[in-house]
Structures are given as structure tokens and as C-alpha cells.
Length: 251
Image (cartoon, rainbow, N blue to C red; front, side, top):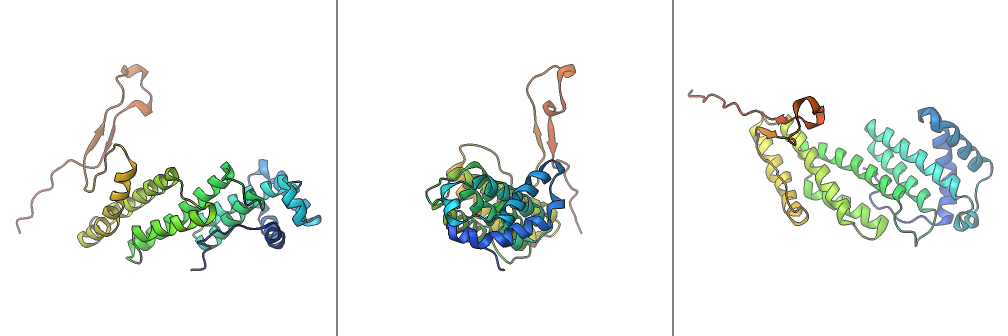
């Protein structure tokens, strides 16, 4: 796979070299943006196309507004591309968006747009890799290594809160494929043994309390004691799973 799994810093000169293709990509897909953002995106794209910034202008921040607008546009396109199962392309778009937000400043700490773009990229990456887990082509441990490598290459470290979010996402995705394949005992056992149980020690280090079930269970969660007439849908009890005992097969 031709995925940019290491997001190295782009200098101002590298941004200048990449802008032509990035602007052309955004311009060719303007119809995919929400109508309320389309005019702003179009204005930024046109400005960057008609008067490309120099490396000096990128370094001094005088064109940062247009670069940030382009970054948000590329992030939107990354999400849409990931939804179309074109993961490699989506990760390249997310990386470009991240570097537009960074603006060629090697000392800039991760801003909210940078963090959001990395989160979107990791969501696309984990979703794709978990489908490979389903086919037995990779494991949860390998996915965590990929995720950590990407984030560390971009920021130099992996924030604990981000890693916790990735572990939660990974567990949710693994549980989804486990539940879908529970009719196959061998598949079910492999997903739990080689993937879910491999993530649990990492969660042990990070979570102070909670509940994880590795088998089908009936769970009833009671909401706060609110009189029935005042209850909203969010305050009702949640019921999941099945508690019915299956008849024994004596054959």
C-alpha cells in the first residue's frame, strides 16, 4: 500500500512545491463542499492559483489564512475519500491538510485543526486495518504500531489522550467484526485471542474503571431516578444483547 504512514514536516519550500497539485485537487472537487463553505473555498483556491505564495510569505504568515482554508478543504475531501474506501488517497489528503495548518513552522505545537486532521486520518486508517484483521492479514498490535508511528512522526510524541481514543476506537471496531462473525467459533476465538485480548493490557494502563465484555451478555443500564413524565429518551434504560439460554444440542 502506498500510504504516507510517516508524516514528516513540510518546509515552506515543500509547501510551495506541493501547492499547485493541492489547489488543482480542491478546485476539481468544489462541488463536494457544503454550499455555505463553497464560496470561501473557491476564493482561497483562486487566490492561491492566481498568486502562488512564496516560501517567504509562507514563513512570515502573510498567506496563512488561505493556507488554513485550503487545509480545511483538504480535510473535508480526506473524509469523503475515506468514506469511498480510498484510504491511501485519503491519508495523503489528510497529511497535506495537516501541513497547511502547520504552515511550514517547525516549532508550532499541535493546534486544534492539526489534532482534528490527525484524528480523522487515524479513524480512516484503523477502520481499514480492522477489515484486514477480519481476513487475518494483520493484528491489533500491528495496527497500534502503525498509529503510533504516524503520530510520532508528525508531532515527535504520542499524547496519552489520543492513544486512549485510538484504543477505544480499535476496540469498538474489533467488537463490531467479532459480533458479525460470532456464528463462526474459530473466527470468534481468533479475533478475541489475537486482537481484543492483545489490546486489553494497554487499556489496563490507561483506564481507571469500566466494563469490557468478551462474550455475549445481557446488559441493563438504569438511568437516574427521574419521574416517568419527565424522562427523555436519553434517560431510559439501555438493554443490549440477549439473556435467553439457548437449548442444549443433545445430538
